[in-house]
Image (cartoon, rainbow, N blue to C red):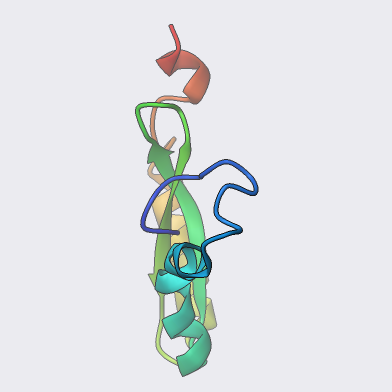
Length: 86
């Protein structure tokens, strides 16, 4: 659950703003104290995973988990990376 897909390990250690930007969408749930989760929702053209972040109102953990479960039951998020490479 980031603005972009994964970047190479260690590639942004010299740029603290870039590192912060990678977490920018997860900070609001932490600051507000609301439940949040990320689940896979597909892959980019390079086969890197894409995450979908869900947030719920305070103390609505069960509703959040039920919603995530319903989304997962819809089926596989997308073509697996090994299929993209073919």
